[in-house]
Amino acid sequence: MPTMKQPTILIGMLAALVLPASFAAAQVFPPRQPQPAPMPAPTVPSQVPGQPAIQQPPSGFAAGLTKSIPLVSILGDPTKSFIQLSNMRSPFDSNFSMGRGLTGRIALEKYTSEAGNGQKVFVHVSGVSNPPIMTVEGAEVRYQFLFPSIQFKTYYRDYSGEGDSALTDLVAEKVLIDIFISPTIDQRRLPTYHSVRIAITGGVKEADKCTHFFDIIFPVNVCKITTEYFRQIQPALENGVREILLQPQTRMQFEQQVFQFVRGELLRNAGVNPMSPAQVEVLQGEFRGTEYIASYVLR
Image 1 (cartoon, one colour):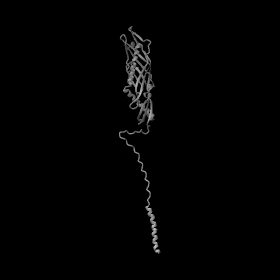
Image 2 (tube, helix red, strand yellow):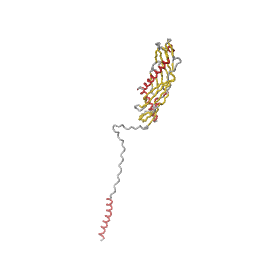
Image 3 (cartoon, one colour):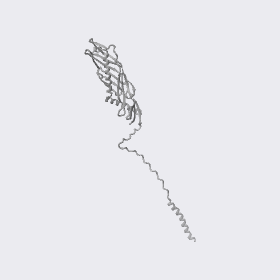
Image 4 (cartoon, helix red, strand yellow):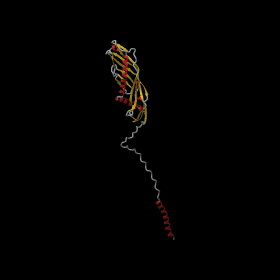
C-alpha cells in the first residue's frame, strides 16, 4: 500500500545522513609532535670562594706583549758619565756618575810622607775621565773610563810657594778604570744590578828628576812616593765605588729611575703614549745574557 512505504523511505534517508556525521565526530587525529624545549640562557659561573677573580685587560689594550731591552740602555746615557779624582780642597771632592741614579762621592785622602830631616811631603791628586765606552762582556756590562792624564801635585813642608816648587809634580797617563756590572731581577720582575767588579790599570810616569836633597844629606824620592800613593788610591777607589753602588739608597734611586724608563719602553712597544695613566704589569721578567726580556699586560 502506497501509504505505508513513504515513512520507511524517509527513515532510511535520515539514517544515511546521521551515520556519516557520527563517524566524523568520532574520528581521532594523531597527536602533535612535541615542541623542543627552549635552550637555557648561558650563565656566568660564580667566583669560587678563595680564588681570585679572572681579570680581563681593558678594551683596546693588547695582552701578552713581549719586549726586549738591552742592559746598556737600562743603565743610562754613557755620554753623561764620568769619574773625577780631586782632593785639594776636601777628601770628598772625588765623585762619579754612571748614568741612571748611579752617582756618589768617594773619600780620597791626600798622601803624607815624612822625610829624613823630619819635614813632611804632601801629595794631592786630580783628574777627570772621558765618558766611558760601554761594551758587553758575557753576562756583564763593562764601563771603560779612560783618564788621559792624572796629576799628582806635590808640596814639601808646607803649602807655600816655596813648598810647591820644592818638588817635581808627576802625572799618570792613560789610566783605565773598568767597572763591570752584572744584572738581575728584583721582586717586581724589573731589572736591577747584582754585583760590581772594578779594575784599575796604569802607572805613574817617571819624572826627569826624581830625587831632591834637603839639608844637603836628606834625599826625597818624589817618584817613589807618588807611585806608592797611586797604589793606595787604587783599592780606595775600588772599594769606594763598590760600596756606594751597593748601598740600599743608591740601588733604590737606580730602581726608581729604571722603573720609569722600562714603563715608557713597554708602553711605547704597545702603541700607548708613555704620558698616559696606563699601568704596566710585568708577568714575567728575566735576563738572557744582558738582554732584559719582559712579558707584560696593560692595566
